[in-house]
Image (tube, rainbow, N blue to C red; front, side, top):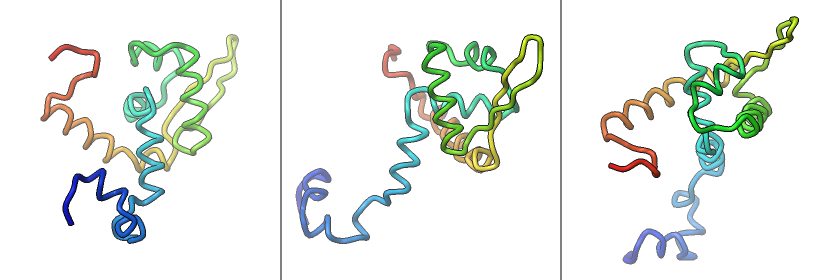
Amino acid sequence: MGGTSAERALDPAVAGDPSQVVCPRFHAAVELIGRRWAGAILFKLIDGPLYFREILAAVPGISDRLLSQRLRELEAEGLVERSVHSGPPARVSYCLSPAGEELVPALRGIHSWAQEHDVRDAGEAA
């Protein structure tokens, strides 16, 4: 079968073959951790719980609003756990859930691969 991978993906014969279709769960997982800043947040939490401000400082370029949104999404997906610590002032910390901990080898692998291949931010000059 010839053509580009995009053309093959659109071929009805290939689209109907389950062995040629991307697993929907895999795709959903990649989309989840691939959302802007989600992977960086998860990676920072590998070493243990952090308070909101600590995560904000550790992930340069993220806004308060977007960090809050991503943490809510990651918590809703069961990858991050939120803990409220009584105050004053009351403080909230975040850590990886057991499901999030299962991602650690993959996150470390992506980190190693990025270092080996000198992967840079899309906006960063090479």
